[in-house]
Length: 136
Length: 115
Image (cartoon, rainbow over all chains, first blue to last red; front, side, top):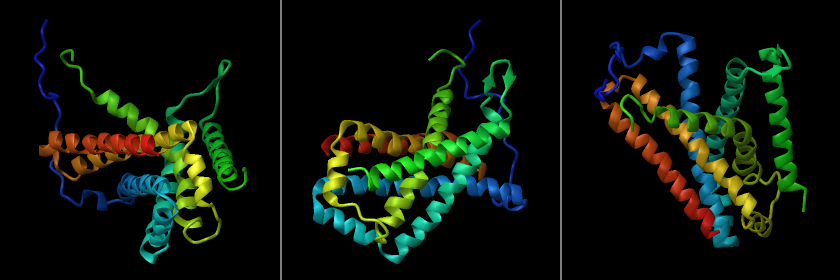
C-alpha cells in the first residue's frame, strides 16, 4: 500500500487568543521555562565571541570583559543565571519522570533519580570551577 | 525519506541532548564568565585561557557546551512561536529556527578550528 506523503494529516489546531498562557499560573510558568532558553542561547553566543576574542589576543579579550562589566550586561547575566538555574531544576525534575532507572529488579524511585542528578550537577560544577580557577 | 517518516525525531533527540548539556554545564559557566570574571571576583589570565582553548579536548568540550544547547533553545523557540498561534507558518518557523541552530554550529566550528 502506498501512502501519499501528506503534510502531517490529522493535526488540529484550536483557535487560541495570543494571551492564552496568561490565564493560569501553570501556563505562565510553562512559558517562562520555554523563554529561559532564549537567554541561554544569547549567553552561548556571547561565550563563543569570548572564545574568539581570547584567540585574537589579550587586548581584544580585555575589551570583551570590560564590556561585560557594564550594568546592562551584568543585569542580563543575573537574569540569565536565574533562568539557567530554572532550566536545570525543571529539567532534572522531568528527568525523574522520563528516565526510568532500574537497579536489579527494582525501579529506583523518581525522587532518588532527581536527587542523583542534582548531586552529579553539583560535582560537575565544582569540578569545572576547580579546573578553571585552581588547577595549573 | 520513507513515506510517513519525518525528521522530527532527529530534532527531538538534539533538543534532549542539548537540554541535558544546558542543565549540567550552563549555570556554572554563566556564573563564571557572565559575573565572576567581569566583576573581578576571580581572576583568570588571558594566557591561561589561551592555553585552555588551544587544547583539542577543550575544543570538543566547548563545541558540546555551545553548539548542542542551541538546538535545545531553538527547538523550544519554535514551539513557543507555534503555541502563540502562528500555526500557519509552521514550515517557515521550523526552517528559520533549525537554520539558526545549524548556523550556530557552523560558527562554533569556525571559531574553534581557528583558535
